[in-house]
Length: 178
Ligand code: HEC
Image 1 (cartoon, rainbow, N blue to C red):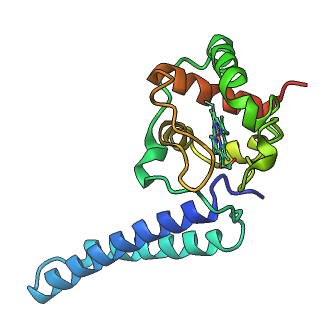
Image 2 (tube, helix red, strand yellow; image 1 turned 120 degrees about the vertical axis):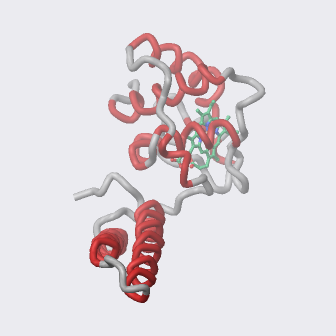
Image 3 (cartoon, rainbow, N blue to C red; image 1 turned 180 degrees about the horizontal axis):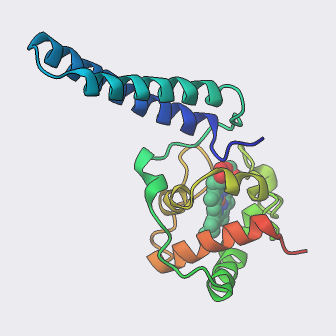
């Protein structure tokens, strides 16, 4: 089974839940100390602690261990505003073939003509794109990836165009062109 989340992402989730568990345990303790109803807060803290422990276990067992490039935790919650249609994917493909394929390769295999001198080399997008949320890819396309050859595209592409390319990345991962 592949958890649709990397180890890094699962650990972040576990840490958030742990913070919640600590918060509610603290609240339960305060209420108990002041002799007020404390059980609900204690239960909430217990549930979060259990979920946090489960997320840690999943992170280090079934989740794939692909180091994630720096990306804010909130990026994954952004939704793609472009319609999920073949037209959007086609618009994204036109941009991809023009600007991205030189490094990432027409099929996204990381085998573009400019790829071979790079360290790190562009990875296989067919493998890596499904491991991250659309908003995370959008963030990397916006900002570029420090320490790699990946540039940011805010200046060259409009926001809509950047989201269209994200649509195409997923289409590419499902059915790479021959
Ligand atoms: C100059 C070469 C170059 C160009 C041009 C380029 N990239 Fe990249 N890209 C890289 C490198 C190197 C990385 C880091 C290794 C990796 O993650 O594939 C990267 C990483 C990425 C990632 C993160 C993938 C992941 O899951 O780790 C995405 C998404 C991406 N590029 C999309 C694009 C898009 C879309 C374009 C065109 C608008 C583009 N790139 C243009 C070199 C390039």
